[in-house]
Figure (tube, each protein chain N blue to C red):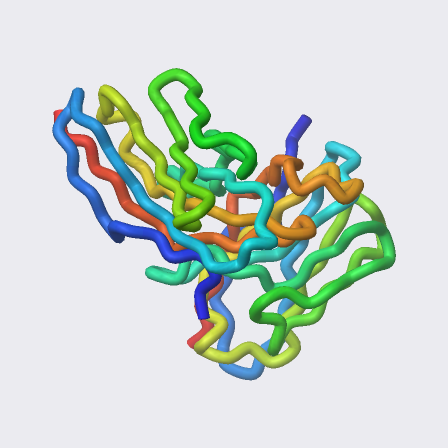
Length: 110
Length: 115
């Protein structure tokens, strides 16, 4: 069974719009929640990450919102650009073992 | 620095054949990981290593073996390939030392097809 559930599977957003990807987990032992970005033919690369002691982290156009009580976290991409078109994976980490969501393929239309 | 490199980039095997995938990192990282990526399944951990000479099972270890004889290398072996092992395989490394906040650095992947 998947430890981290991610939605939606795919997302189409107009340039300048907001992209929102959601993840949920069950294991309260997870204590680190990174997001990875993957372009076709490449390996995933760390985009932004959060620890559960904060509710929000922002880096440029990328924001993670974290709801510890609901065991949910989400990635918001503000002012989405065609260059953001990629697959995004959330992950939850415990004892250096990473559990990834199933991925969201984002397509930002010009 | 080359970062994390994987060899080969592509491979086609017949059912029952064996092969070894090589991962190398030049960042002096302690931890190394092997994942497989399948459509709709995300990345699933096969095996990992927390240091030279150590290995441990991940979520989907069956049908695979690993070895970490040198700190910079992590080998993934398929003794008798099956069509279910058709996937893209990624290696990753991190500094380790027990810190969950370590970034994982991924290689470019190996696309394996088993006929």
